[in-house]
Length: 264
Length: 163
Image (cartoon, rainbow over all chains, first blue to last red; front, side, top):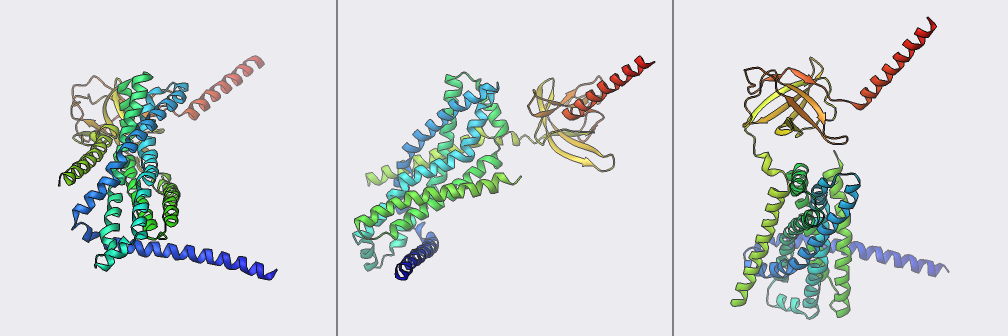
């Protein structure tokens, strides 16, 4: 009986140790990526190729989701606002919720599903097929050649994608509110402009999306680089990327929101 | 070579879209465009009670927006609130005996400063102070005054019946 207890205690200890070991590896890895950043700009070709696969290929899902989220917001908010006879504030509600919260957060979640998983799978497969080891044999640092351009591409793409999401969402809200439900077009824009502040709302939203881009890109490349070099390991790493990014983004969003909008 | 070109064009398109979205958010969605209109003149108004008036609240004449509240302060000598109004350059001819009142847009709406033009021949200059002001209506004070009035009416009536 004591043996079983000690065994389970050992299992718990092993899990905790491997968790902290992984956390430490992730931070050491981040440090190496960050120190490799300057050299990455010396090879812009690699960065452009990654911007294409991370940013351009994510645009379709971002635009379509942004449009739909904006349209649904317009529809739902109209129903509630019309109870109070203040349909004109529709523009303000749609724009504020998109710019402050939904734009950065939903774009980051979509980004994790569309681009983060692809990054992890790509790097993980490179590791599984020993391409990374091959690069090291040729005295090419796989971190600078493979990982850093992907990390920067994620960091650059995320704020742009979030901005596209918000702008398209506002258009979607405009389309439903003004086009279908008959809110006055001038009132839609004027209430929006009177309430949405450039610094307070838009800039804070951009800061959020930069933070999310950093976290999403970091998790994606780390999971790929740290994956077990088997097909099962790559599949697990890909799943972890999506789950961990989603959790990290949602948790970080609360902290950032409390810092930006909570303290008055 | 052709393929690299296509990739670069696509990336250029993506970055341009992102920039355009940021531009739309800045110019069309937020109020950055109206911040730039800093030219104009300021005048101050002393008020007993400003209610919930906030910085950037509208200043209107006859309902037309002519400026915004640029600062709300407190005068320690007179114990009055000091509201600084920034009025746009286009509206130069405000008579010096104009009065300022703080109103509420609708029942639940935001508070704004309403100017009522007077009949004087001289106009406000930069830094002038508005003499005639009317405080914001505070609901609690209004109700309190109403109750007090009712109560005093009641005592007056009862005293009358005794005599």
